[in-house]
Amino acid sequence: MIPLVLLAGFLGAGKTRFLTDAIPALAQRGVRSRVVLNDFQNARIDAARLGELEALVTPLNGECVCCGSLRELLQTLYDVPAEQGTVMFIEANGATETDELLGHLTTDPRLAHFTLPLQLTVVDAGRWQKRWWHNGLERAQVATATHVFLNWTERLGAPRVAQVRAALSELNARAALVTPADFTASLAALTAEVGEVPARGGREGVAAVPRPRGVPHTHPFGSLVLPLPATVDRVAFHQFVQTLPAAVVRAKGLVRFADRPGEMYVWHRLPERRTVRLDRSWPHDDAAATALFIGVALPLEDLEQAVSRLASVG
Image 1: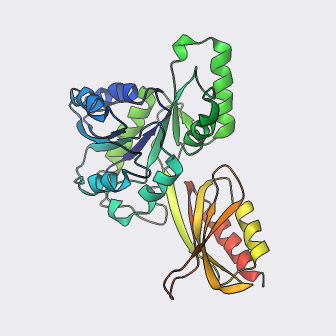
Image 2 (image 1 turned 120 degrees about the vertical axis):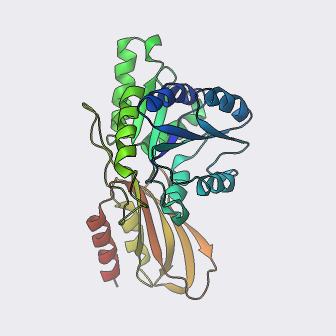
């Protein structure tokens, strides 16, 4: 398998700069980098910049890879050979909704030659949460991260850096705060560990990410699909969604309610909220009620018990 890394961060946070440090560091450890680079206009410019570092770079101009350019991104990933000693980076543009993209990267069976994705979010320490109506998107890009790199700290005083560190930890305590050196050491170790593994295994794929000294133990994203009862109590279902474990960063599926068993709905738990959105659906007659969960270190037993309790409410 090939380690798969989603590189996220708001516009100007320094994602490409991070890669200019990470790619040579990986090369020194004998690891080759592939990069899919998504940007609105200048993907080819940054691709040329990274190509000078002997990385294999595919530019994707245009819309975000979480929506308009998703099909092109996935086709690019399908075509990547499962070569040992290689790491695959996806540098998403600054407007990317990471939870949506992670949903595709964790559940598409044609990506089984990659590990479940790591997500490194680059944060501009000086501009953190100073983006007006985009603050929510910036928080969401951190909330789904397995690793965070705090950039541009040399421009700031110690109180501001400490403030941002505390905010990031409160928002996502699971994420490891890393430097490029930390992260590349971890990636090189992961590359060696999974190099001879042919495909993702088990319900959550590769279990853990090797860690350098001083870096907290972290897990890649996983996904889990569980069947729901054929019909459920509407109130109990809303309670089920509201009490999902914090490790679940995205949840969706199909559901039928006992008070209207002839209707089926697509359900989504809304990001950063415990409420659920329901959209009427007209699926095939044999479509089954399901729940898809995406997150870090998903608590399998807790989720199975929650579904079991839902089934017992009649």
